[in-house]
Length: 116
Image 1 (cartoon, rainbow, N blue to C red):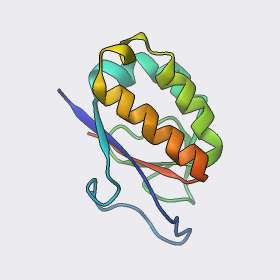
Image 2: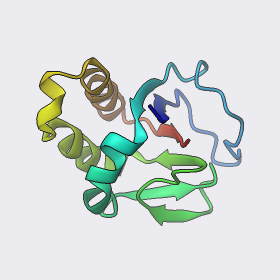
Image 3: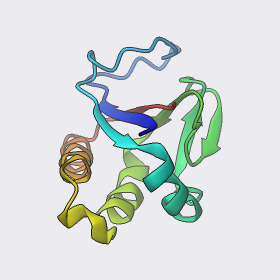
Image 4: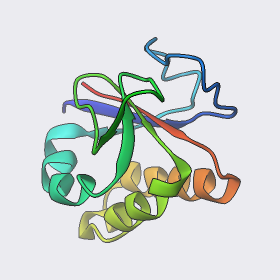
């Protein structure tokens, strides 16, 4: 398994660069990058993000080797990607990721992604 992790940032600091690897701080959920991210890639490219853990670096999709910030406006796309994956019925980590996305969406919070 090649782990990739997602968490919720409780309060975004627009002047901070989120470059430290701190998955425990954001209560991250881990999924397998090479199984899921490859399959989702085309849909992920429709999702506005920020790379390098920096809100001054707009992009799309995920920085698979670094830190990505996912803004609240992109969460509906991300939620659809994960919820439409048929493997969600068997994979507990995908179910947990979907719960996390829905929580961030409901609370209008940014998510953070730590690549491999």
